[in-house]
Each structure stands twice: as C-alpha cells, then as structure tokens.
Length: 339
Image 1 (cartoon, one colour):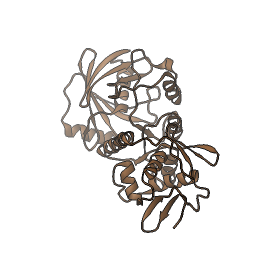
Image 2 (cartoon, one colour):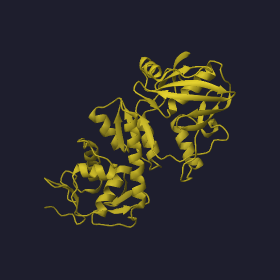
Image 3 (cartoon, one colour):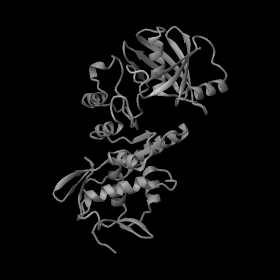
Image 4 (cartoon, helix red, strand yellow):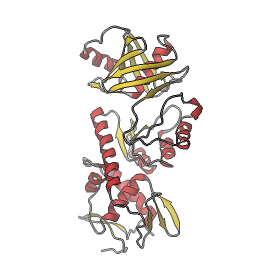
C-alpha cells in the first residue's frame, strides 16, 4: 500500500482541497476498521482506497474516520492525479466503480475530469454559461476535454477558502445567471462570515466538521424546496403599493428602479406575497423556506429579512410593509399599514 496526500485541484498538489489516497494495486481492500483508522491518521475529510480491477478499470472506496461514504468528488480527482503522477496510468479514459455507481474518468496531461450521469430533467448549460463557470476557475472552454456533456447543476456546494479564488466571489459569479441553491461549507464559523456569505446569495451555511449525512440532508432539503417553488402558482405581474415583482428576472421595481433580489430573498418575498397579513415566526419561515427546523439558529432568516427591507422599504429602520410584531412574528402588509 502506498499513501499520499493530494489536492483535488490537480495542478496544485498540497494546496487547499486535500484528500488522502491509498494505492492498493490489485490487492483486496483492507478490513473496514483499518481503513477508518487510516483515514483518521491522515487527518483529511475523506481518504480514497484505490484498487485496480483490470486494464483501464478501478474500484474506489471512500472513508472518513467515522464511516464509509458513497462517493467523494475531490478524493476521486486526487486519486487519479496520484495515479497519473506516479506513472501508474497515462492520459486516457478509465472506468471507475464506486458504491454510488459507475463513473467515467478522463485523465489528461494536467487535469482529471469526472463524467457522471446526466441530470433527470435533461437541462444543460449554454456555451456562454459554461464559459462563465470555467472562467471562474481561470479556465476556458478550450480546456474541456472532448466527449463530456454539459450538465445542469441542482445544488452548488462552495467552500470559502479555495486555492485559486474566493468562494464568496465565485458565489457572486454564479448568482449573476443561475438560481440553483448554493450551500457554503467552511471551517470559518464566525457570525460576520456567515452573514456575508448569505448576503452574497448563499442559501445555506454548514460549518466544518460536519457529518456527511447532515450534508446530504441539507442538499436534499434545498432541492426539494426548489421543486416546491416550481409547483407554486406564478407571481408574474404582481403589484402592490410598495413594488412591482418581476418573477422572470427575480427583481422588484421599487421607487423608480429595478432592484435585483438574491435567490433566497426572492423565495422569502414570494412566500409573503402569497400569504399577505399572515404571521410567521422566524422558525416557521425557516421550516417553510429551507424545509427543515432551524434548531434555534434563525440568523439566516434575520439576515435575509434585513436585506429585503433594505430593498423594498422607504425607511428600512421603520418598516411598514415587511413588519415584525412582537409575540406574533413577521407579516407582509401590501398596503403599508402598521399596527
């Protein structure tokens, strides 16, 4: 067995998104307790145990110190980077079996690519959207190997501390043209960082370390919420004394100007518009918008309400449309009346 620590950003090993890699050759996988213990010794979020199963084919199992996980993208990329750099493989296409399913891995001279199953809705990015996403990583479409199909993204998972860019800057780039949920994961857990990430368009924030089951639950909750939003009646053309809502562009026309709404701001405002004069506590808003209990931490809701007021209220310090009534909760009053 050969052990490595490698980075998923293939041209910058030992940089910022590290994973453990254990090359087994053609030997069988060790006992599970040993693999968990080794993952703990390497002190990285996931360790990949890589076994060659034939010419051009591999089987990888992924372990944290606590459990085996189905799939880890950055550990997969790191594994094939190590295989290439140690001379075990050359450029080409390789078959990979994981507990999550079978993947096709394309290895280039200085990059590794995962080609996964297309999304269920069949939607794909335009050339312009792909170029924008690649540019965020300092790449162009010319860097993309032949034969990989463009894929829709159901959920964006962003770290803040990235080798080539800042996750918050990348969030702004994504938000300029995409409305998929964005979940921040970071070891930075101070209130200012969380608030800033949500203000820039993040939908949720998960501090490290976290259980992978919690991450999966958060992703599923955000995807479920988007599906529920799509099933709601259209708000196209909604107008009240405070603003006119542009549901297509997710903006409000207020005081003579068009004001863009962050994705979560739009969802919260839509809930209020559909339920005028109805009171919601912060925890009830969290449950309805995020699809899960706040567990007592309602800072996310408060940040988004604050941002909404700054966009639709004449005086955000004295709100008349989006009000908070002591003992009852938040309420939307289209006429702009206070109690």
